[in-house]
Length: 100
Length: 303
Image 1 (spheres, chains in turn green, brown):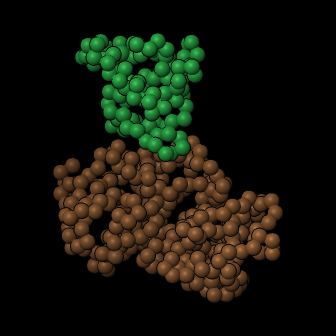
Image 2 (cartoon, chains in turn red, blue):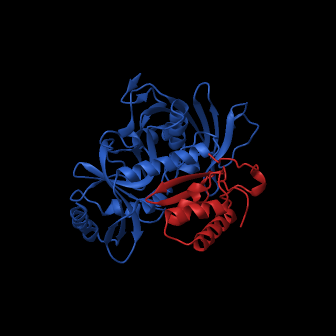
Image 3 (cartoon, helix red, strand yellow):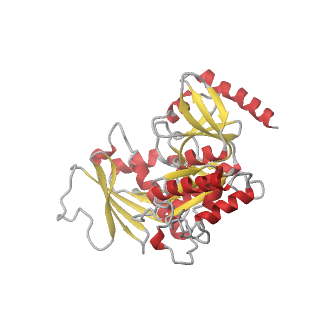
């Protein structure tokens, strides 16, 4: 599990609609839609939480095991990072940098 | 002096939403075509912005003979299609565009349609200089059909059939306001209604009227072998509608985060305030308007 806090990239705009989230690159060239679970994870990517803390919060909110929540968080963050939607680890300070 | 928007023998004033553009053209033939084409949009209001159009005969133009744009004004070539471009300059102090264009740009089959780029540029350059956050109306790539006192908007990517829908409408069914673009208001409190306004943007069908009418609903077109309609969820409508909003950039303005935010916010507010449907349609006029019956059923089911 990653240790750094995770934060949304600064070059994106996002909009929550009916429990899903559309994430738009601020050059307008790409749009991604996050499903309900990914949307919940995305909203917690404010630079204050580490992945394991996000997984723990998911366990509090939903009837799901920590293993399942951790896997979901890992998969979601991997996908978001691959699309450049999250700040890189070296962009974050030790204490985390809120993205908004 | 101004008579029905024509000022002297080389200037007309064209209403574009809430702004008025003075279009100056010293070429007699071109001026008459402009006056005739935009006659229902001519206005006597003071001009907010000026567009001087210089038409030249040769397809290309030399840079050093004084006919091209010189000086330190904002300038660029504005492409309007394959091998077609305007040489365009803008002076922010006088709010004046000067455009040099080859006469061949305005011959068949496009006729005056390259003017659309200039009209759009005038509109957003003027509105965004006065209201940098939100132009009061946004241009939407769509066909607007006036029917029973309200406008239905049919939108979708190019070649999807907006003009076809417009052609299928006769006086018995509805009147096409425009088969290329309309101006759409931001939702208005307290009833969150939206208004559609005719835009002087040329499509394939002639302008029919210059009016402001409440919006009834938005149809995202999908060509099909059947005619059917379904209500779209908000996310689906938002994602698809966003791409039909004309990018509200003023002259030489880069597509910044503020521009993308403006488009995104407009898509969000419009899809929140009005119903969106996906319309699968054939080329059959009668089948197309059977959609109304299906819409009534949909609305009844929702209520």
